[in-house]
Amino acid sequence: MAVTCSVPRLRARTLAVDAPGDLLTRVPDEIDPRDVVAWLREGDGLVGWGRVAGVSTTGPDRFADAERWWTDVRSRAEVEDEVRLPGTGLVTFGSFTFSPDSEDASVLTVPRVVIGRRDGLAWITQVVEEDEAWPTEHPAELLGRSNADIEVLDPLVEADGAVSATAWPEVVARAVGRIDRGEVDKVVLARDVLVRHREGQVVRLAPVLERLEKRYAATWTFAVAGLVGATPEMLVRLQGGRVRSRVLAGTIRRPNGIPAPENVDAPGSSVDPAHPVDPRLRLVSSVKDVDEHDFAVRSVAEALAPHCSDLVVPEAPYVLELPDVYHLASDLTGTMHSEATSLRLAAALHPSAAVCGTPTAAAARVIGDLEGMDRGRYAGPVGWMDGSGDGDWGIALRCGELADDRHSMRLFAGGGIVAASDPAAELAETEVKLTAMRHALGLDGH
Image 1: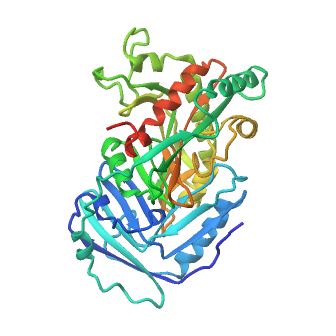
Image 2: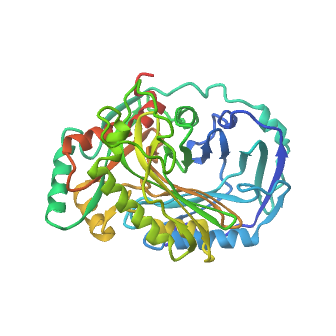
Image 3: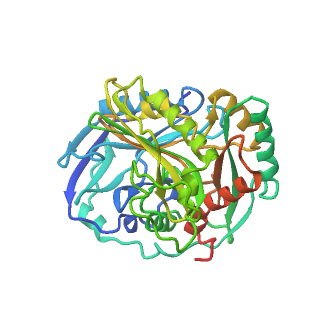
């Protein structure tokens, strides 16, 4: 149900501006971190702050209730847009819970200010309510500001989450036992760790985003309502009638100092699986990882098929290289023939086998039985949507969620469990996946 359902009358104005440099340095340090939004890749994207409107939804209809609210908002809004690119005009940012039974709420939020950049063009969008005056400050003044504390990290300490690292292999072993008994083919299990401000102050998110964006530029760095991370997985992109989804499943740690074989990370590349050294080649020849990846690709293809024609599903994955890990990856593309928005597509795709398992309902039950925690918005869709319904929705991975008191966060990491999974190796995989947020928060000593 919709927790907050008022439909405001908004006015939005998008103006072209000179390229603003590092977008994240424009975020004022005094802004409530829960009101910072971001969607960045390779330096381009959207950064915003403030909150002029929003909705919170819960339960099985959380996606539909949120989309219904957004449809009403955009139908009542007055929009001036001199740029007319994806991400200009009236834009909403969203983050949705993994489970319909979560005690957390799913959210859509409309920022007061959004700065965007795409293909060398830049803009500022400002949004006010119907009776508000436009800000007296010229957009160029916003671009002239720079957050002097963007590189200053908060002092944080880490503690165990719902299940300690030492207890995690037993949880994995129990999952393998349920797979062996035929309850599920695959289940994705996640664990959390807790971090808190050493001095009991608010955890600032702009420095965290800055470190994520710099180190993990090839991923999508995001922030919505206190959920912040760098996801390598694009759940769905809808743009001009074209659909794209990137599926990741199958992971191996990336050691230092191994040069990349030519074109090993390119779609359709072929490699020798008998190679004894390179971990990428072990990854593509791993029965466990290839099976896990195939489950995930099939679940996405089945969900997109009712909405797309000319759906292209790669026959084999490629190796995606990130600073800490290698992933098996597949990019699916298609042409829309339904009227679905990007959010409706994200709802149809969620939860994929990459974050839940196969069969979906049975895997969700195993997750509820074994994880010992509420995932909240971890592993749910996160991203943005414009007034046309186009947008980007990733899966909230490699992330942390700010607590309501803003003094602490939960960090999350998970992995796909199949019959061939080794409990100790699965623990190691979660530790590798926690590296991104530990680095961003300064908990890795760098």
